[in-house]
Length: 203
Image 1 (cartoon, rainbow, N blue to C red):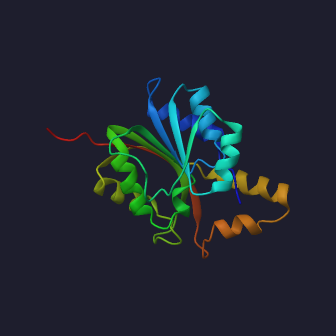
Image 2: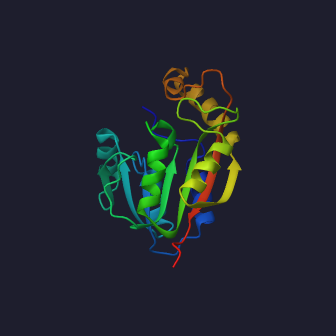
């Protein structure tokens, strides 16, 4: 299984900077894997963090590397948290591998406080139609508006995807495992960064 994502901590730093979290803010990492992002935002950014992942194997590794942090086995489509519990939610290359992206975004909205930030890096379609769990930019923006988010920043970061693929081939000699995770059906795939804010409740 893949344990990294395009851009790695360079894009994580970019997300955190754009979100402008205050020290001690509570942030959920959806699809935390082995906990690299969590270790960074806890130790360097001074944020309180909880991570979830569906893989028991990756979480066991995360707990061994970071015994002081909280890791929970759970699905992004069913977050085991109370409403309005987090100031921010990060999802780095995790939404596109979920069965129901719309439901996962609903769950993220539910657990965010009003004014909370959702920060995403992931694959997207440069073509017009959705496929294999990927959305194009227009479809993303439509879903965000429907869920009560205001899009603050959207950036194409496809250079990191190209770099990631090239490095993967050099390290493994093949794209077989990577290709199983990125089913494109001939469509043009890019990589994006998004920061959106949950609108404050009126009244």
